[in-house]
Length: 112
Image (tube, rainbow, N blue to C red; front, side):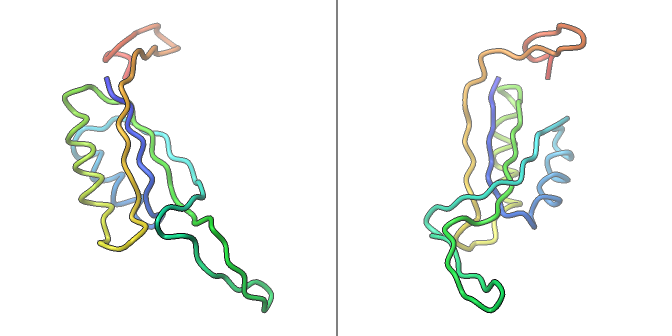
């Protein structure tokens, strides 16, 4: 099993979610986050004063997936979330040691 973490631009969330559903992703966790990378933040105006912030709004997706589906998930996120501009985000893949469905006690791939 794999645990996939993707950080993308917020306006791409619906497109990515629909594309992932189309390839068989049954569920995910979505969190609104703030962060920065090479983009180095941006300038905003608040009550007439201009200020610079290092933190940009992003969306973090967390997906637990079977080993065979993980590469398709990463490819789909990369293709759909891309705007060819700096700040499009990142995708991380981590080995997932175990998963347990709380309600039934199922473990492994069947818990996903």
